Image 1: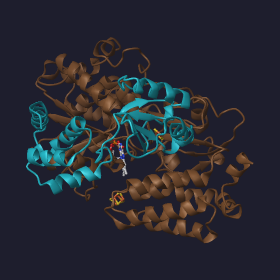
Image 2: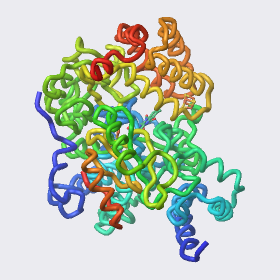
Image 3: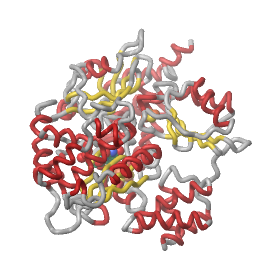
Image 4: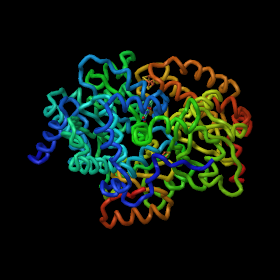
Length: 425
Length: 163
Ligand SMILES: Cc1cc2nc3c(=O)[nH]c(=O)nc-3n(C[C@H](O)[C@H](O)[C@H](O)COP(=O)(O)O)c2cc1C
Ligand code: SF4
Ligand code: FES
């Protein structure tokens, strides 16, 4: 399968981050047409027809999310989730840096569709350059009448505001994000109520990922059916896959959903000379490992879920034969231990404990009983925490023990990493 | 607090109709101005936001980008998460230690650099990755790191790179 560049069609055009170049490549034509020829309900219908599923990780149908907003006369808000922090994922960073106007256009279309007079982009604190690029894009779009009072000369007005967080992975979870945007510690809220009924400042709120909102532009431009004709029946359209790790040409690659993993690896230049494939984490550090048996697996939501892992945000980390699974998995757990917000005990204590067990296994002083302990701990965290972070934290560990038990055992029989000893000696 | 800084903070407050949302942007502004979130900054933020200092402290302590101690003029944040690990972060960190005597912790004796290991910076395809004063630098081989740091030590501004 070849790359299908829809969102990224103009990503390599020089100067595309400026309004004039973006317009020259058709930018804002869709917004103009939609605002003058389509009702908000038409835009929602196009997105419903497209079958677009949220690109932030959970894959929830976007059109349905937009339809859930209560009709009770309260002001509605749109919030763009640009907190991207899932290890292995770097598509939103790329979209913001290369195509800031695509995000602005997508957000204006989405805000019009749901009837929001105000919209926010929540950027992770590290995205300072992205913040400045978007600030510039918003100023240009406002001056050109694509934002602000009377968008494109119509009755519709929209205020688009930027907000920078300050460093905390958990703020990517949508309710923690809302708390952070309200100026508090970013701690997940109890659901229900869902943001659709009580979101930012208690108002009905739609939270969508950067890539989701960018996809709205081509969907409205070409129609929902056009988008739905790509990809698979249950995972329509194209997806940006972030390819990283042991590859010759890591980077973002846009393919139709369901592209075989092997084609993605090939597009990213394949493995380095003389190396062989060992494993892949197909959906960021929150996803379970897959091994060579799945090298041709279709990279869509349902196929990956059936294989016991997930597409998540589309961050594909490729590991070759030089990588120690024990060390790599321990590093992932260190991340989760560090990022646990501490609100609930299974997550706070469990990630700490698992990190300790993995550290001892990596050092070669673990035992077979530690492996069962890891699986036991994973069982006691998964599904029992306040937010989905808990499930995310245990996916790599649990699958590593199932798929690479021998490699763990080799660590305690060799009293250390056999791969490292091989390299040194 | 200088008059200019107070004006900047008031302008931030005016940006957000719901005042509480201004706290984190105001803390960023204070940190930009003082170099880190000083005890004075906490008091000023509390006064501006009509909150207690304990409430402000609670927010400050939650977020990793708010520093409670001085950093170097150039604060270097090296990602050592998964994808960067696969592409040479350890070599980069070893090199920064050996050649530049930089280790995670306080600023270098001359106050120019400080180093921190951080979690994934969402740029894994261009690993190893670091930020200097939150500006991105990609594909940081030891040689490239030398170029960047030499430039900064000579007084260049940390501008970062485009992808
Ligand atoms: C721990 C955790 C971290 C998350 N991080 C992000 C993130 O960085 N970006 C994002 O868009 N969604 C993230 N999500 C998913 C959001 O909660 C939410 O589902 C998403 O923003 C909805 O947008 P979408 O429907 O367009 O995908 C995260 C979820 C969890 C549980
Ligand atoms: S699961 Fe972890 S991150 Fe989520 S609320 Fe509990 S402690 Fe916080
Ligand atoms: S792992 Fe280093 S930027 Fe993502």
